[in-house]
Length: 173
Image (cartoon, rainbow, N blue to C red; front, side):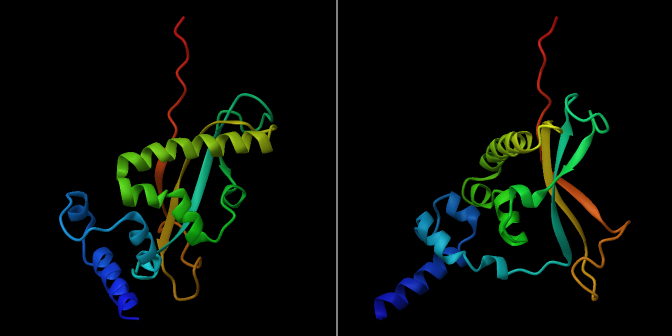
């Protein structure tokens, strides 16, 4: 029991009391990734925000398929690609693990792959409305005493795009 108690104390100290900046510079307590994962599981409950959020995914329609929205950005169903509850889906779409462990460059690289998979899946499932590019992020609004989405009204709603695929380059003639 003493060994278990020491492990729990060490794990909490190594993760909670050591900022990422120090860890990246190899200053502080050693902490393997599995220790970080084990002791950050409750991290989502350790913060407070004043704005609520929903995720969004958009796709830029190609010139194929249905005519009414060709060449325009259309909303893609977030739940079709991320069926888990909002907190889990946000962690997956934000690619939290990449950002948290390896930094913003790794997160951006993961977003490129994720956008390509979302685009391919959407195009497979919706051949009548194929998309050429994907973007995603969050929409947030102030908390409201009447409920989670009650404050989700203009002009207090703001959208933040985390990632947008670049246009494909066409060959020069």
